[in-house]
Image (cartoon, rainbow, N blue to C red; front, side, top):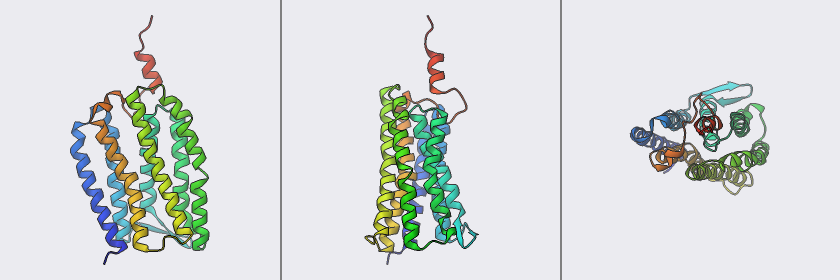
Length: 247
């Protein structure tokens, strides 16, 4: 019989296989993108390790009347910084816009991690979770489709298309999580195994699928139009200014 623990172990194995495959692709990534590709692989590794810790029942810390899964808090922080920050940088966003997107996206994650400490009832807690995922959504959509997209329109077509694809993948996962919470809240999803399967699938698409998609794309011609990401060097606009011929 399939149990929640079995599903967790299956996805741990999937994370391990994905990480191994990405390590194999790393040598084909241009050198300027290997640092960010390494961070993407780290997202996969940390996510798998966090899930393994949950399966083993370790990594939680008692806080007040509840417990906080410390490994999940660390893992999700790394995921959101690397993936949301990376897609913003890919779209040519400024550091301020990138930081704003990461902070807004992290808000629901932190609230849900520390919610057990408050001691709300199950239904009340689920309603709060829906609210904290819905409230930041207009801001996330504004940043993605507003200033970041305007910056992306100034970029080469292949890079702009890559930003568009990754942005849509992230929003797809965001919508999946909201739909999942809604189904659980209103009693339309009660089977624990199916609930775990959907939750782990959404998590893997985000922290396993998106890194895989990006690292693979970095090995193709798309990488020619992508500068080094997550570096302390010049911004896109500074690089453009530096490479523009002077009269």
